[in-house]
Length: 80
Image (cartoon, rainbow, N blue to C red; front, side, top):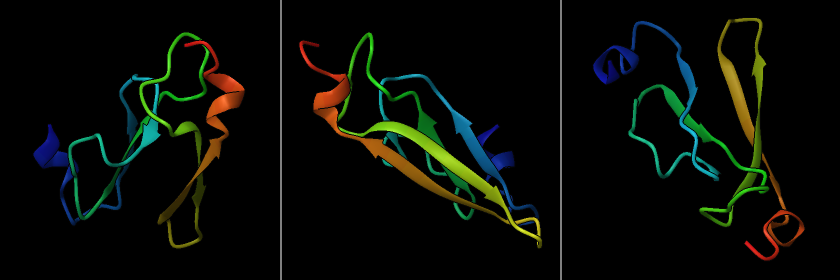
């Protein structure tokens, strides 16, 4: 599965997993493509200091640009 996601023949952006974090450092690399863990935002638990979501924009050449929106940890992880 990961080898298929790593193909340079396609521009792939994969959003997956569910831990309470929003990052690219805790997921398996699918370079040259992009993988994101998106499960942040607080609530039940906070597994890292990066809580939030990812905005994806499909460009006219069909590439995908992504950027995380990280919220202040204290606003969603208090007492957790």
